Image (cartoon, rainbow, N blue to C red):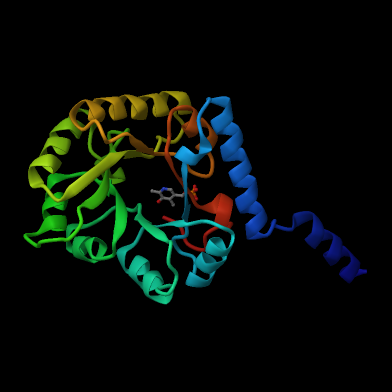
Length: 241
Ligand SMILES: *Cc1c(COP(=O)(O)O)cnc(C)c1O
């Protein structure tokens, strides 16, 4: 009796395997892109694997993902060393970055999505000569709460100017996280406006890092080029912030 119950309960609540979740996300990305007359090749799907073990990253890569996002410096470099023999893999750092951890991330050969202040730019360059420019997004804060990370909208251009003056950086575009409880269209409109502003100073900075598990279709409508998708691909995280 109890085994019958367990079996049917397992079946009905079964989480689809990772490869199925990835292909279902890809289909939803393609559909959302088509609705906005966009080419889904212009949209990079980053799987955010924070708090998950390196084995899960391997599974995500096996499902055809080539871009992996992490939010803690130590976790990023640990996974990089465990997966060192995999080529064709682009790492992204999406979490808040403290100055004293800047070097770790700078040396990790990843795209940094969370650059939001001049002191962090200083720590990332720190006098050293690097072979390649560091690719970055400037993170915009849509809220009044500085703890959420990101630069205030009216400080975006000054920060971009500081970036240009520093040298050694390639600004790809803007990154942001919508405020909870606010209409998504309003949040993504603000991000798109910030992107336009940024491009007035840096015409090549056309990328928009926005769109997470719960809102990526809406983000695509407003021009997102880099989706940072965690739980919808990986399943729930053991720990969360
Ligand atoms: C964790 C995280 C994500 C992924 O969030 P999900 O809701 O799990 O898709 C995206 N961006 C940042 C900055 C994150 O820290």
